Every structure is written in C-alpha cells, then in structure tokens.
Length: 398
Image (cartoon, rainbow, N blue to C red; front, side):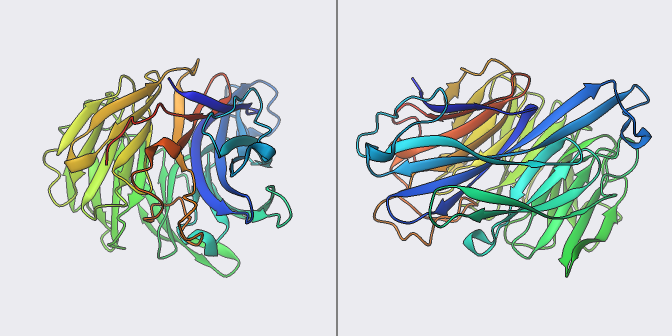
C-alpha cells in the first residue's frame, strides 16, 4: 500500500506535474514541483477575446508551486497538509506549498529548463496561445522559493481555438510548442524575448497534444495528435514528416517522451489506454505496449533507471517497469477521486552522492537500486487534488 506524504488543493483543475530537484544545503534537499491549472469558467466574460466559442465562457488557470523536502532527521518533519509521516526511518518527507503564478489563461503544461542547476526557469504553455517564462528563486535561509514572471510571447497557438497544448525545451535552448489546430512551432530565446523560428502548418489533421525534442539530435522533433499519428520531423524541412505511424495507436496520441537512458528509445501514451515503447529508428511497430487502464495522458521517465510514471486518467497513476525494452505495470495508485492528469517522480537524495548531480531532468545520478526512496507527485483534475506519496517497497526493477 502506498504511503501518503502530503496532500494539497489547487485553485483550479490540476492538469500536469513537473518536478525538479534542488539543493538547499545542510539537513535537507527539496524538489520543486510545478502543477498546471485549468478551468473552463462559464459566464461573466467581458473581453470578447476570452470568449470560448461565443458561449460566454473563459479558460482560467495558473501554475502552483509545491515543494517535496527530504529531511535527514525527523526534527524537521512537520508534514504537509493532511499528510502522514513517511515511516522511512532516518529521513522524513515534507510536502509544502511554496507559491503560485497567475497566468492570463489556463495552463496545459510546464517544463523546466534542461540546463539543470545553471538555469532556474521554466516555460509554461497556456490556452490563450502563449508561452511564458517563469523563474523559481531559492531562498538561501529556508526551504522556500520566490516565483517571478520573466516574459510572455503570444500567438503561438495557431488558428481555431488557438491553444498551446504542449511544450518542450531542448538542451540547445530551443522551444517546441504544439497547437490545437494541428500545427507546431519551433522558437528560440533571444535577448529580451522569444521568437518563432519555424512554423509547421498542417502537421496533423486534428488537435496536437504531444511534442518533444530528440535528446541527442537537435534537429529531430516528435509529435502526436488526435489523428492517431506519431510523427518524426526534421526541423530543417517544414513540408513533411520524415517518418510516421498512423496504424498502431487506436486513439489520439497524447504524449511522446524520449528516454533519458537510451538514445533511440521513446515512449508514447494514447487515449486508447496504452503506453508504448518505440525504437525511433524504426517506428513501424512498437517494441512493447502495456494497457494502463485509462487514457495515458502524460508519462515521465525515472531519472536514473528504466521506469515510467503514467497519468492514466480514469486508470489512476500507474508505475511501469521498462527494463529490457519491455513494459510491465508494477503498481497502480488509485486513491485519487477524479481523473489523473499529472504524474512525476521525485527521487530522494542519496547521502553519498555529489550534490551537484541533482537535476530531475533525466541526468544519471543517485542510487539506481534504492527504489525504497522513490516519491511521486500526482494530480487529479475535477477535485483540484495534488498528492505526494511513496509507492510500496520493491515495486520496480532495474
């Protein structure tokens, strides 16, 4: 049985989780967690630009910031709201609210900078067609943060509903943003702003939900959409995809996540309830697939071993082992009372590891075999619920 470490509520529907490990020195380490918020609010719209479909509705939201703090002693273990002691002996887990960023519209997703501890910013995708940069600044004297809005660029969401549905940030500094009209854009940061470099119109026939850069090839981009297609793009050719698969997914492709452990492995999620592993050099047939009991809205790789956490909507939060390119569901967290839209890992620090190797963006580090220290943050939508929990011992393998 999972151990609940803490529980919080967001102001609006909780629809995505992104974690990042950060150092606070001394006796504890804190992971900072971003949770996107989305609500379609009916009535009371004064600005025609915010009117959704002429129905007097408006998409509202923001980004909540939470912390998962690992203390070496229980002296500092006051626990989070509605949280339980983790029962882990010498180290406690504290789940706490650190702040919130108001946004001009509902937020679909946030992504931390891939530069790790050298860059304390995240990019946020919103339903009004914009990307925003925010900065999360450490407080040197306490495990708290200050959240600052850096800049926002609009007109990235394409035609129709004009929403930015997914965003990725490459190690080279480029951004990729998918739009609800089936297009996507590549952008770069310049002094004082973010500029669109290339626009891929008509990339998919229906709404796009997924976009990701290849981890090693800077010109390769993966996309997925409601047309059931997984596509591979060369960023230098805006006219057509270099490879695609339209036959395997039985419903819309909702996420694409390249492995941080194997250069040629990617995972996809779909509304057809399956998570799949692929060799990106040959996407005619998946290497493995696993039914997670609900639409696989988002999936996140463990930072130091071949495992995935999946937000499986009505199926709860599902942990999958991905060793030897074979997917196996090893645990389902079904305590959420609404559809699960976000799940990400928070790995406890290894007391013997180098503190400089603490990024949660996929870098190798920590004790690969110390599964008992795994902590996850998951969120569910309609009840605005964010939970921090520890899975049962030995639920995954290397």
